[in-house]
Image (cartoon, rainbow, N blue to C red):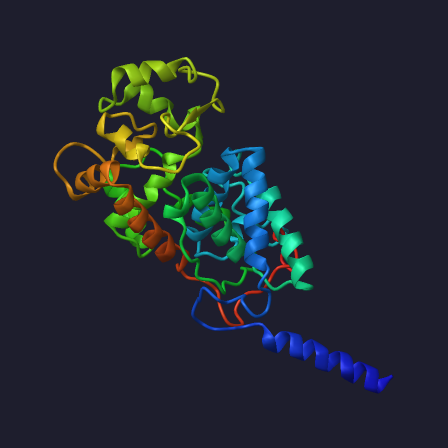
Length: 322
């Protein structure tokens, strides 16, 4: 009996030892411990997007909303507990956060294939975001994801409310918010290009279509049927009306003609010759420049305060602390 217990202990230690615990993120983190993990994530994301193309935008948004609140640590996925109120009920997330079941499906599949919990929920979000972009935009938007994040053991509704930029922010507020996360003006303009896919609720753009002056009048009036002055808060409109389910540069083209759906979108282009204006103009006509900068900024954002080594945990269930 004692020898059997010793054998099990040795197995447990061996399993623990071979899981990498580098302090730095690396693209080959799972190559030896579970090489099938990334292909499994991609196949499930592909299936989800085939069922509902909007899910690509939802998965990309999950990664943003995770990273901007205490770093890329999977905290956005945690349900409330007696010890904390999580991020799902924060204003930027409540009633709009989506894709959680896809994450659950991915987690179950990779844990089954890896024969134990090896892949963190935070890494699943990072890879699913990349896969969504490359599936909806093509190989130009594919990039290597740095891996090795671990999962947080707590979450904060207050932190989500104070860290996620709302759709009514001015340019200076947006830039200040991004800079507080170690990102710069180019990151702000490039990452905002994520709004080339997905939908927004009427409550996020109502003030823009009725009160903003830097908006094409025909564009504003065409949205007022979808989004009345009162009621219909959850009615949806495409962030990029030209190609709402294709990851491309038409979001920036729309800004040039004052057709940004959100106030915060249009703040990136004011026609005053600013650095932000120049980037919007560049991206609108050069998909290669946009792809290059978007991928670099996604990598930079994905490296925001990750938990590595022995900090945090690898969750068994992405919605709950172990």
